[in-house]
Amino acid sequence: MNDKKGSTKLNPRKTDAVSVLSDKFGKAKAMFLTDYRGLTHQQLETLKKGLKKVEGEFVVAKNTLLKIAMQKNAKMENASMQKLEKELKNPTATLFAYGDEIAAIKELANFIKTTQLPKIKLGFFDGKLANEADFKKLASLPSREVLLSMLVGQLKSPISGLHYAMSWNLRKLVTVLGNIKDKKSASN
Image (tube, rainbow, N blue to C red):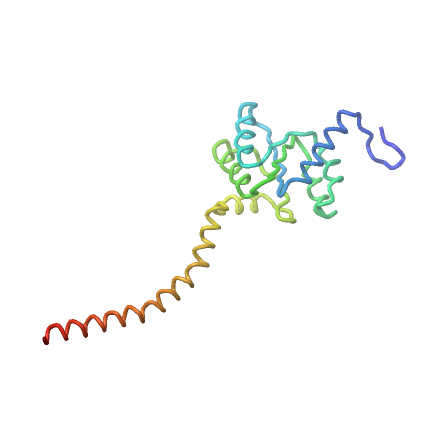
């Protein structure tokens, strides 16, 4: 039933569900809506366990409850919210990434490779909307640890080059002094 403002009145159980979903939207660093039709219960449980290890969560909820929870979340712009709401058709499950977003996306992408399900509808990553192609690009990125080690290597290389350049003169001096010592030893 609708009240005077036009919003839907919910029973207390659904209100609690919306509150929980709204908290999830607030905590998540990234989220993706998926069409999970065709997944078995066992597959869903396997996916949920895998995502839990990387601080992610796969939540199945009614589209109306997701829509209300999204509207309560102030993270998204109105235009982004409208595009996400348009995707709330058919059964929808949501990937919430709380920790390393890429790790959760990679976990879901690996699951999709093996089962061909769920289908990515649309998501929200780094303050912007992300479609299925963006999801695939994000899933192909190296892990956070690999990126950090690459950064350290890049930061270290100028220092290593400077160290080599500065030590080269010392090595050259030591070589010249060694040659002089050898000549003096040979002449005596």
